[in-house]
Image (cartoon, rainbow, N blue to C red; front, side):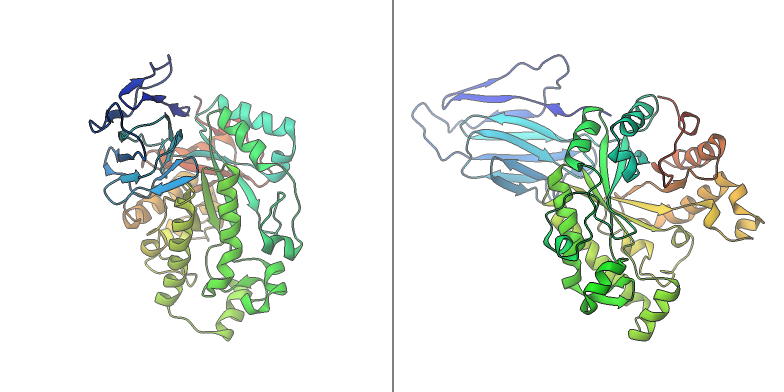
Length: 418
């Protein structure tokens, strides 16, 4: 993955602007304009303003920081600091490479063309792999020889464990913090290797939390997505993940329950499909606002079957609504999870490529504009050829992909070589 582009801009005096010459691997972006109002005797406060553009138009909701000051770009990609102090200007937009510039003094205008990141080609990092220096290095080595450009970690998993030394009060109060690795250290290693970093936060399924907070409970193992107070726990973990250095937070189990828990939930409160969809969309809208303000992208995992069905399948994940506030979406397209007869196959698990192709063809036209499609695909029970068939189906449609293998057992023959 392309390394962070750094452009050094120095204002040496109130009447002179000098651009540092770029190094051999530095692109001289953005264009910089000196405000002619800066005179020999001019004193502060100074203004730094700018406009951020991408290939498709303005970049909105990008986080721009200068020291302790923060600004979000507006719908036209514009931002401004009215009392600029010397420091480093950092620009982070979801789905774009970040940029840094050094600022000294004077009125300054930046015109920046943001470069989009390539679609994610990812491996999920099992917590025990993240725990082991040797196993994690082996994963980095595997990525280095293939087209892998992204790692997806867990910070809160399906067992309700928080896997690092969190400081989120709700997690500490629940007493289910089981530190297995140092996220900041692993993120630093991944970024040194040029990899994009995502962390997965399991959201509304949490038997530990539901037992401790019956006022938040929808079923014995499920938190009520309609309870906005209950949102604070996963949102607190998500914001902390951004502050630890992750580029993106992926919400998993961001839905209403299925099975026995669904029957319990229906007995407690009956909801229409529109009410379920509105509840999940509202949570993701709030998450997007908080994460974008921290410079992080937001994604969510969804059931694979909703890609092929017009409704929400009872879980609040209708494609149109669930993707409205996301930067990326990851349907779980595991062929082994489709029942006999799907697409006319007695055993869909024997047809990995066609199953992925059908789901993407059915669901991608309904995804909100600008949202990256990157399905979870099956890297268990399959050989390298079968995994590659799924990857090929995704890439033929312009989609990214993430390999799911619970224990993190991947081999080079599963992956396209670099």
